[in-house]
Image (cartoon, rainbow, N blue to C red; front, side, top):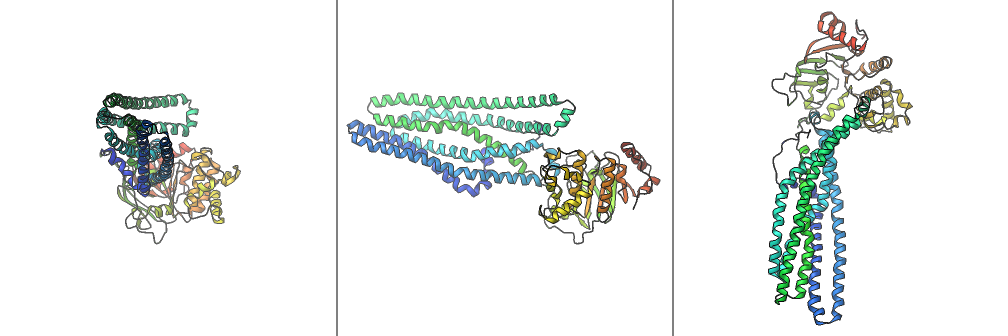
Length: 606
């Protein structure tokens, strides 16, 4: 399995399943009532043999046919009661189980949104998808049927054996002793099946990840002719899953062999003993018939223990997988006593900032090492450096996508860790080089950072239009339904440049105090980029901006430039100043010119 799940303390089945009790508690009353209804249902079925005994030993033995009709009426009434109880039980459990599933899914999704980016860097999306869909569906089915039938059948078996003992303790003892091996088989089954079930569910998550990656990367696979390679990988994983499912099936088949064989042996031995007792006058014919009629009613509860146990163990695994996510610590959280920015000006300061990934070996140096940088209100600061110098990592610290491991990032005099994440991300907006759009309308994507606006209000329309104009996204009006056109998943129905312009418009529409741009113009042609830069200059005139420069033209947007080298800011100044005094800066700029084919020299316009 490619996804490494965290180690969790070993828990028993009951303790593990009890973890979902907070979600079940609002419906616990109906669940308990449904359990009693199910027990009553089977007891009604057990009452039929009592009536049969009375008919055989009474009216049929005496030859009084007139008493047969009332007995038949009682049997009919019991049958109708059984049908009504089945309907009542289903009504009691089906609706609550769907609410419980929805509540758990909402909680899981909220947790996924709350967890830091570092968590999502480690976990495969297919694993998370299989937990939020397949595992929760299994828990719902177990709550609706599995737990009720399992507990109810155990109660019914105990009550049923009690009834059998009242008719003939000898036959009941033979039937009980003959059934004991079933419980031994069940306990042995638990140890094997739990391991195999967990492996199958994890493999399903891996397979879902492969499908998702193949669908999202279909253009790359087709362009490089690697569809067959992807298919081979999928087939290998599917074959591994098939083997695990067959192993599960063999375990269940072995259990069913014993669960079917043991009751049959018990019936045979009981029948042999019953004939002997009836022949010796120790048991009436009616009692013998009633005993086996009751034993037949108990056969289903006894046989169902097998698949109910397998369902329970699969549910335990599903609960473990769900709580692996819910138990994940949220390392980036709101402060207990949050502060607020009283005078929003957009001044951004990096005070001796250090950063390293949490699981980095101690011998690996910090990615960012003692960063000291001040971006004044309304100023545009460009970050320049060779690949791997730490530019993108530095921008991710501004909105706490990651937290600093030393020093502080300060916004308008307040450490960003002392602000709520909602306030921080309302004041700082980001546009990334890899533009991610959602499967929604253009309007919804652009106004994502303005939840306070009604999507169809005149103000929202004005904000969207201004942002689209600045981003030179006039192509939106040529889409089939204009700004209301639903774009494909992740915006893949659009070109790279179109996606970047919509993502840039989204950042501009948020109207933040600080705008962080991680080379959001890389996919644009020269003419379009020039028009976008002209629009951005109007926005950046009164907005603080931190811009990662991967192209010479991006540097032209900046008032000052910060040079990063091996995770450190080694120089800060105007472009012309750095060209004059810093050889490494000249090397970086020349590499950008070679990459982009655009020379950049001289003073940057104010």
